[in-house]
Image 1 (cartoon, rainbow, N blue to C red):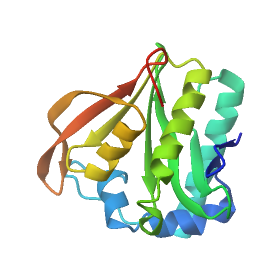
Image 2 (cartoon, rainbow, N blue to C red):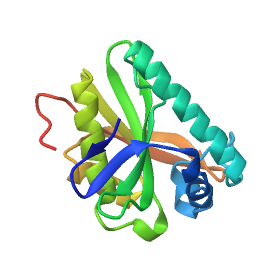
Image 3 (tube, rainbow, N blue to C red):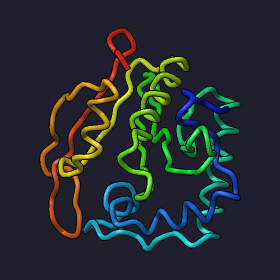
Length: 188
C-alpha cells in the first residue's frame, strides 16, 4: 500500500530502512514526543539497527493483520520525498477502536523538518483512514510541541481540549492536547 500526493509518499517500511529509523530514534525531539518512556518520562535508549529491524518486522505483521481483518491498528508508513525517494519520517496508526475511531502519530527527522512533509503525511493518512471507514480520527499532542500543534491545524484538525497533567517527561507533568477530524466536516 502506497499513498502519494506527488510531493510526499507514504509506503510500508522495509528492513533497508532500519538504519534511518535507528538514527532518527536518537533525535532529542523524536525521543521527547514519540519514543518509549518509563513511568517517570525517561526515554528508552535510541534503537540499534537490529532493534529497528525488529520494529519493521512488527510493522509487517500489522500490515498482514490489516489484510486479514481490515483493522489498521499498528500499521506504519515510512514518509518519503516523492521526487527523490529520500526517507524523511514515519506515521502510523496507534489504535483503531471497535467504534471505528482511529488515533495516529507521526515524526519527521530533524534535517527534513519545516518543509511541509508532516502536514502532507497527516492529510494523506487521514484521507486513507476515512476511506477505510473511520468515523473519527484524532491526534494527541504534548502542549509544548508547537511544531506538531501547527501541523494539526494546517491539516484541518479541530482542537477539542486539553488533558491537564496527562503525560510525564523527565519527572515533570505535561498537558496533552486533543485534535480530531470527522469525515463529513474535514477540509484537509
